Every structure is written in structure tokens, then in C-alpha cells.
Length: 214
Image: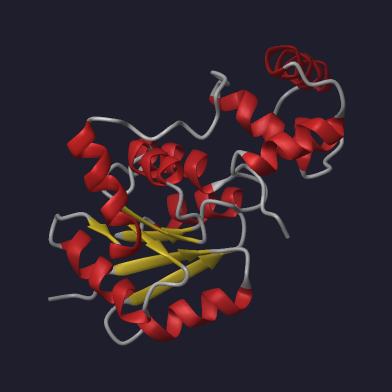
């Protein structure tokens, strides 16, 4: 049986190297990506069986990247490996198409277990967050969403790039939009969220998992 082809995504080089060492005996590591947009490009080119990714990544966060990935590669399995243990993040990840969810403080062997599980057509959730999911199911209480306002996918992309300090021209280039359209989206976001400065947008993006804290 051939080894599963895995694309690794994280914005920390040491994390990527750690994942590679954990998986290289049982998997074929086809590439790495350090931001969400590079992840999309490489996934489209390499068509891996599995992608590991983080919630917080530059350029495009992991949840929005996952949504796009599942549209272009519906059969690719997505395993989130992140620091975010809150049930809202777990919920959003699975809504975006995740097959696995681990924490960066999970045991290294869990990543191997997750890979095996998703390749067998199952889901894998680290025991560190599974209890919360079970409790939510029992009480029929769904975790809160990451954002409490209905931003569109495009608005979330613009918000993240604004919060990362990109200029309107840079955002327009990254998203293949006109600067005028970017300004329109930014204005709509500020109106919808009742925020008035770029600093407030940045804080909102950080609190809601669209931006890394580093």
C-alpha cells in the first residue's frame, strides 16, 4: 500500500520540521507552506491526500483556507494542528471540512493516529478537546461561532489582510481586486462591526482567530 501524500502548513519552521520528522517514515511529505495562500497554491499543484494546517496563519487563516481547499480538492483530508482549544474553533474547523483536530500540546503520536484515522475514512479529535464536543452533543448546545457578525468570506479575507498591516494596493493585488473595491469592503466591514480604526479591526481579527498573536 502506498504511503499517503501529505502537505504540511504552519507559519513556524520548527513546527514544520517537527511534523516532517514525525511523519516521514509513514508518509510521503510532498511539500510545506508557511501561509494560507501558499497552501492553496501548493495544494492545487500537488493534490495531496492529507493537509495539516493551523487555525492562525498569515495571508489567509486556516478556517477560510480549509473552505477553499474543500471546494477545489473535496477528497483531500484536512487535519488541524493548532493552539486553539476553544470549542468555537473546533466547531468552525469541522464546519470548514476538517477530518482531524489536534492541539500543538498533544502527544506527537497523536498526529500519526490522526493520519491513520482520516485515511481509514474516520475523523480524529484529540482527547484534549473531545470532551467538550461530547458535552455539546449531550446538551444539544452548539459552541459559539468564531465571529458574532455575518462577515462574508471575502470580507474575512480583507479583514485579515488589513489587520496584518497590508496596504489597500497590496490587498488589491493579493485578492485580484481593484483598490476601490478593497476600500468598499473595508468600509462595509467597519460599518457592520461598528469599528472605526484599523487598530480596532486588528484587535477584532486577533480575538476572533483571524490573526496570529505573534
